[in-house]
Structure formats: C-alpha cells, structure tokens
Amino acid sequence: MKRIFTGPLFMYRIIAIFFGLLLVADSMCAAADSTIDSATGQLTLWMVLARYSGSIMVVIAIMVVVFAFCVIAFHQTKKLLYRQQQRYFKLAGLSNEYVFEYDVQRDRLILSNQCAKMFGLPRVIDNYRKIVQKKNSQKSTSPLMYIDNALRADRKDNRIDLFMSDGRLGKFRTMNTLCYDRHKTVEFIIGKFVDVSQEVEERKKLEIKAQMDGMTGVYNAKTCRKLMQEAMTMREQDHDDAFIILDIDYFKGINDTMGHHVGDKVLQTLARNLKRTVRSTDIIGRLGGDEFCIYMRSVPSRQFVGEFCEQINSCRGMLARIKNEQNIACEATVSLGAAFVKKDEIFEEVYKRADAALYKAKNKGRNTYALEDK
Image 1 (cartoon, rainbow, N blue to C red):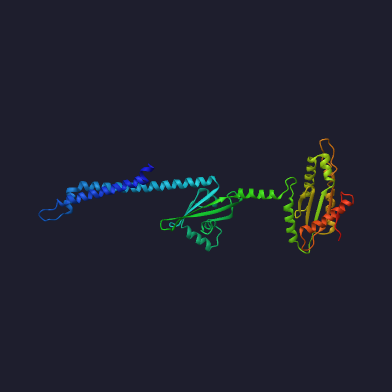
Image 2: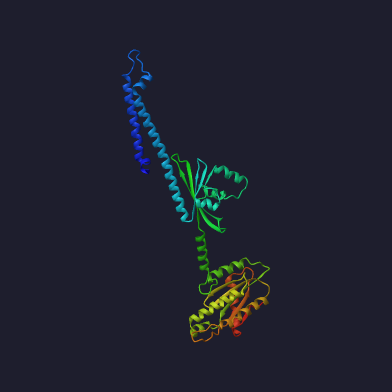
C-alpha cells in the first residue's frame, strides 16, 4: 500500500492521468467544431452538454479520482513520517536520549514520550515561542527554559544538571542540529538531552582511583604532594599547619623475615589506623615504600601535634596482631617527625625539616616521635 501512494511511481501515474485529461479535452474541442449550429454559426453550452455529457462526466470522474489519490497519498505520507518519528523517539529512549523537535514555521514543539515525562510537559506544545517569551518576562524557572537553551543555535553541545522524575540529580549533554528548506531557511530544529550521569560518575571514580594508592587506600605520592602544596598556598597566616612524616621501623627486616604478604598487611593496617585517627580536614598520603605523610590544617598548638603523634605510636598493639603462617606475631613500630609550615614555603622545604625530625626520633630509639625545634 505504501508503494502505491508514495514514491516516483505514484508521480508518474499522476502525470500520465494529467496528459490523458488534456487529450480528452483536445478531442472534445475538435469534435465541438463539428457541432456548431449551421444556422447561427455559434457553439452553445447546451449543445456541448447534450452531445458530450458522457465524456464530460468521464473527465470529472477522472479528476475526482486524481484528487482522491492526492489526498490519500498526502495522508499516507503523513502517517509514514509520524511512524518514522515514533520509531526514532523509541530508539532514543532505549539509549538514554530525550529527543525534541521544534517546527519553526508552525511554532510547535514536539517532545518524545520520555522527554515529556522527564520535564512533566505535554508531548505537543503549540505557540511555543509565545509561551517561552511569557515565561521569560515572568522570570519563571519552567522546564521549558532548559529546552529553550538547548534550542539555541549557539549552544551545539552543552552540559547541564537536571532533576530526574525519581528525584535524583542527573548530568545531561544537550545538542541540536538545524534543518533547512530549499530556500535555505531554518525549517526545523532537532535536538536531544543525553543522560551522561553514569559516564560522569564512572569518570569521577576513575579520577579518584588514579589519585589513590592501590594497596593502602590513601592518596598516592603525586596527589598528596599536589594537595598539600595547595593547602600550604591557601594557609591563613594566623593559623598554624603541621606536616608529619612517619615510617615503619625496620620494615625491610619484616619483609625479609616474615614475607612480603605480612609487610603488605602492616602497611594496610597502619593506613586504616591513620584514617581513623586524623581529622576530616587532614590529608594522608603514602610517599612510597613504608613512608607516609600527614598534613594537619589549623593545629591549635605544638602539644596538640605531640598528642596526635602519640596516638599513632599506640597502634603498635594493632600491628602486633598481624601474624605469619607460623603464627608468629609481627613486632612492628612507627617513628614520626613533625614540622610546622612557614610563610611562602613549598612542599620540599617542609618535607626536609620533617624528615630531619623523623631521624631525631629514630636516634632516640624509634617507636616515638620528634617535633622540630622552635
């Protein structure tokens, strides 16, 4: 049925019927010459109707048929386009795309079912531009404003946040394309909102994963240096920040005598203990091997830092619970060195002073801490 009323073949049939009508009319005119009243030399309408009424009826019938074919073809084409639009809308719905189409000449906005549901709008909105102008004058926060932004030709690809029907905040990418008629005038604007929430979430997880030390779950060396340098740059001059370095005493011996799997457990247990001990504003990182560092913002006093270091030293009992296959307990302890951040100081400078304090702690017999001299 579709092929009967659409496509080139249908147009060829219309053209053939048209020329057929011309031939019939021509033959009627030729024959009419022979029906001229010999007395008056005139051709009257009634004379033509009386003689050619049958032919005229045939011509009219053919014209009605042609007109009917045209009407049917128009409606068939309209239905075909509607079905194609619906198939595209459904396909877009399967891929987290919310499609819309704006008919510029009719000032009509058409939304896919999924798009209409997300915004809580009807599928078809007539007089769209007038409605938007009214919303703008009222400074309304209607969902139509999001669609209007997506329709703008200067916003080919944009990122926005939208609240979903389930209440969650979704991340969307908007894009559109312009469809022109043969006069190069914009006829339609077709666009879509693409839900990229999962993509954004996965990217965040990858970014976080890239910042973390895989074994211990604290920041890796590159990230902690970056974060600590930023904290030092933003430090308020009337607040004191502290930088602490700590490592595990005789860690190489633990690896050699009890195995690397025990050494890994020691690192992981120490990292968990550090995360439980520090404040939410502090930064923990693993610089490499058994060396960790902590950046403490706005510490109230040197005594506060000393008490904090004592808490870390007290994890010796927790580390002693780690045992090897022979059920031999690990004798791991921790030494710490702390320094206080100075004005306009960079990471490497405070690191050197904290490292010097760490060696003071080791020289005192290990399993203790040392603060830099005032």
